[in-house]
Image 1 (cartoon, rainbow, N blue to C red):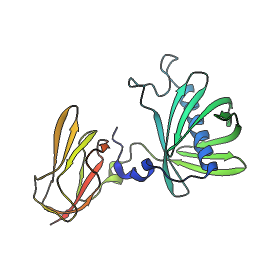
Image 2 (cartoon, rainbow, N blue to C red):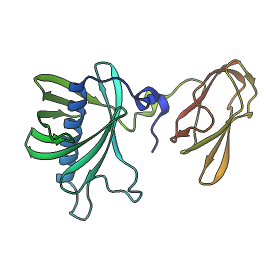
Image 3 (cartoon, rainbow, N blue to C red):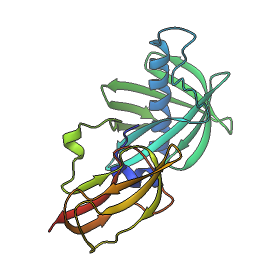
Image 4 (cartoon, helix red, strand yellow):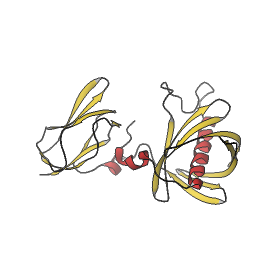
Length: 218
């Protein structure tokens, strides 16, 4: 997946206004419809995956806050959502051009207008204009490089973290043990130095290239 762990706060959930939450649902439904319209064939639905239990997702930034939207498409134009940790449901009643109408789990009908400009979603909902910026899933490597960074070589579960902030380490010293594909992998310090930051803890699930530990030069 190669999703950098720098978005940890977004994954833990943030407090959103109701209008921002509605805007996120509208932007996500609109983007999903665009992808569905451009799919290669009816046998390949948008977001198709073999592990169907995994939701589709998007990461947005609005008013300086990053937050994650997870969703699953169901029969009858119904969707289940988790917007920054808040669950909900939506049934698309009408989607025509930039206009979108949906009904929530309480039967309340909401309307929005969505204009997409690349990764920017301009949404008018509940009398409010909001802009949601979609955070790239695959940032340019140069944008995510941290000096002295030790990253996960693959997705997996953190088994142990063998260092703490302030520890002095040697080149080749094991700093994190990661379990992936039923095997344990040792992440080692590339150079000697002092541990400046520990970004993970035992038991956490991480993606490939997730930032694990930062080591300052000796």
